[in-house]
Every structure is written in C-alpha cells, then in structure tokens.
Amino acid sequence: MTSMTKVRFGIKTTPMHVPYEDIRRVWLEADAVPEIEDAWLWDHLLPVAGPEAGQIHEGWTLLSALAAQTERLRLGLLVTSNRIRPPAVLGKIASTVDVISGGRLVVGLGVGGTHQPPGAGGISGANPAIAEYEAYGLTLVPPAEGIARLAETVEILKLMWTQDVFDFEGRHYRLKGTRNEPKPVQRPGPPLLVGGWGTRLLRLVAEHADVWNVPGPPHNSVEFVAERARVLDAHCAQLGRDPGEITRSVQVLVSYDDPAATRATVRALVDAGVNHVVLSLPRPYPQGVARWLADEVIAGWHP
Image (cartoon, rainbow, N blue to C red; front, side):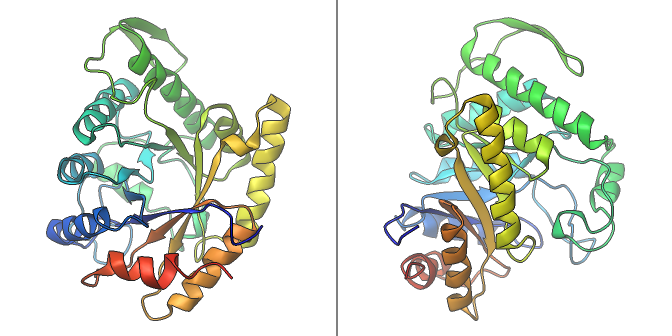
C-alpha cells in the first residue's frame, strides 16, 4: 500500500463528561474543514469511564441537533446499540435524521449489550453494560442472540426504507402493517456501517454492510485489526462478494501531545488495508481542534 491510497478521515466526539456546547463547537469547526469528511457520536446512556455521576447525552437526539446545524459532514453513531430501540423505531428515527441532514446519515449498527467477560473489547474491568442496562430497564442477551437480532434489524430497516407497507415475521421481531414516511433522502437508504470484530458478526458484515468499523489502538492492536480483516475477506469469498466493496474503518485515539505517534498509527493501519480512519478526540477538546487535526495528523500521515 502506498501513500497514494485514498484514505478518508472522520472525527468522533464521545458525548461523555463533555458539555453539549463543546461538542457543537467541534462539529461546526469540522464542518468547515474539508479534510474531515464525517463526524460521529456513540450510543451509551451512562458513563463507561470516569465519574459515575457525570453527564452524558443520548446519541440519536444529539445527532439530530448536530445534523440540523451542519451542512457538509456525513454523520452517525459508532455505533447504535441494537438493544436500546426496537428496530422499527430505529428505522423511523434514522429516516428522520437523514431528512434533517439532507441525506448525510450513515447508519452505524452494533449488537449492543451482550453477556461478555471482564476486559472484553479492550476495556478493562467488568462489562460496563451491566450497570447501564440495569439502570435503564434493558436486558443483556447472549452474543449469538444479539447477532441474530441485529440481522433482523437490518432486514427491517431495508424494508422501512424501500416499501410502502409491510409485515415482518422474524424469530425476535414481528411487525404488522408497518409504514414509514417520509423515506430517507438517500435511496434505497443510508449506507450501513456495522461495528464489531467477532467471527459471526463479520459474517453479517460481509452479507449486509457498506462499512466495517472496529476500535483500533489503544483498545485493539493493528495486528488484531489486520487479522480480523482477513476473516472478513474469507466470509466475502464464501459469499461471492467483492471485499473491496466494504470500507474498512478503524477508530484511533488521538494524542494531542504526540501527533507523530497518531500519524504513525494511521500509517500502520493504512498499510494493513484500512481506508477510513475515525480520529477519536480525548476530552476536553482544544479550541480549533478540527483544523489542528487536518494539519498535524491528516496532512502528514503518509510517508
């Protein structure tokens, strides 16, 4: 892979322990920086780190507000928890945000809260979803069930975006006489991004996703990302799908003190086949951080 490789860059503002005004400022800054093509939030209801009583904003509500105030950025959640909203409700929400944004939404999807051992996903300690889901009356499910539910959600979303009226009879979800107007601006619907790294999840990516996203350093190593990408390629080969159709997207935690280290991480990921990098911003966000990213990281990652 050479420096001529087309790599797209986005930013992520994790809405945890950060005021709304700061997130809004960064998104408006980024909207004016063409080197940054997209911007992302996440989907949690309680902080997963830091003070338990800290503020956190609901992802889709915040995304809608930011969609109304930006003009250029593609936008979405990394990633929507499939355990929080029923699929048809999510389809309605996503359709509305795509309309508000003028067709800039990317629908990021993940399995959501499942039973996981401590330390899973590169996050030390007990599974933070346990306390979060208990607090909001949600239930964890086994990983296999979570993937099966996510697959049905993808089917439902596509029906909502393309059909005038439909019924759906799945193992986990049942709908009757479902209508969804207005449809998304994007036809046949917004791009689908699926986040995760398990082998069964990567099969679903190969079947349905336009974009595959996974957390990179410091949570997962470049070598881990490359190995998981090979698993995705194998699934694509079995299905007869061109793996080049799927954008390879990785989140990277930015170092404000050592941008050279961030650039080196980006370079290693691109060498491993990644072509979309989401630069995750630690809090607090410096003034002018979007322009700084363009100058210090995006402009200089290649050899």
